[in-house]
Length: 457
Image (tube, rainbow, N blue to C red):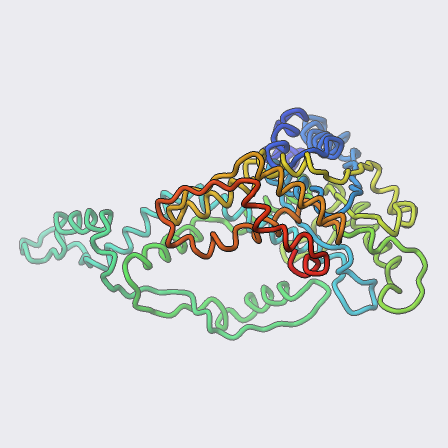
C-alpha cells in the first residue's frame, strides 16, 4: 500500500482550493458553492496522499450531490475538474442502468469503462514520453527501406564494391526525409491486418476479457500483419506508432491506470434523480430502486473485475447530479443518500449570467464564432448591446418554452449567425460588427412566435 500511495501522489495535483476555483472560473460562470465543494474534494485527495498509508486507507472521499436545472453548469464543473486534476473521468447517465435481471447495462460497466479511459490516458502519456526515440527508430527503419544497407563484409575483404549504400548516400536520404522531399515516394511496410476475424462473447467480465483470452490461447489467429504500399509520409506515422508501442510496457500502463482509477478516478452520475423513486409500480420504472441498490456497493467501495485485473472503487469520487424537479434527494434509498454527504444546489441562470457566459470564459460562444468565421477571412465582432440582447432573448425563450439554461444561448447564436455562416466564404476581408439591431432583425420573429420557437429554438 505504501508504494501505491507514493506512486499515486505523482498524479494528484498540488492545487489549493482557491487555485482550483480560480481555474474553474475561467470556464464556468457563477455557481460558487458547487465550485467550492469540488475544490475541497480535490484538495482532500492531495491531503490524503500526504498521510501514512494506514490512516489514508480509512479516509473515504466525500461524494457530492449537485442539484439544479439543466444547463447551469453541473457537467461542465465536473469535466473541467477532472481535466484540471489529470484524472480519469467518466460521465454516465444513471437512467441507462437497469436492475440485475433486466435487459440493459449493469452498474459494474462504470468501472470497466473508467478503466478503459484511464488506460488510454496513461498510454497517451507514455507514448508522448517516448515520442523522440520512436521517431528516431521509425526514421532508421524508413531509411533501411529506402536505402538498403548490406551486411558488413569480412575484415579481410579488400573489395570496395562489397559495401552498398555508402554512408554519404544514406545521410543524404536522411536529410531529404527530414525536409519532406521523399514524402510522396512509395514504400512497402507491414501494417496491422484490421480485416482479421473477431470473436465476441458476453460474459460477466465483458466482451473484452474474452478477446484477450482468445489472443493468449490462439496466438496464430490474432496480431497478424500484412504488407502494404504507402507513401513515405504515411509510412513514417505508422512506423512511429509501431515503435512507440514497442517501447511501452503494456503491463506498466495497465498498472498505472489501475492506480489512477483507484486513487484519482471521478465518476459523474448524471440524471440520478431519474432513479430516485422508491415505489416500484409497473413498466419501465419498475427497477429504479433496484438500480440504486446495485449502485450502492460501487459507490460504497467494492472490487470490480476488469480485463486489466481487479479494480477497487473505495476512493473513487462520485458526483451525482440531477434537476430533482419531481423526485427529491430524500426519495433515494437511505443507504445511497448517506454516500453523498455533500449537497450543493446550483441556481438558475438569469440575464446577467448569460451576458457573462457569452463573453468571459476562455471558450465563450462569441469567441468561438469569431474564431470559426475568422478561418474564412471574415472579421466578426460583437458589440456589448448585441450580447445583452441575445442574453435577454435567451431568458425570454426559456421562460416561454422549456428552460434549458445556458444551452439556449447556443441555439440562439446558431440561428443568429446562420446567414453569415452560409455566406462567409464570399466575405473574405470584410469586417462585420453585430449590434442589437442586427440581433433583433435576425431573431425577433422566431422569438415572438411562441409556437415556432418551440421547434426552431
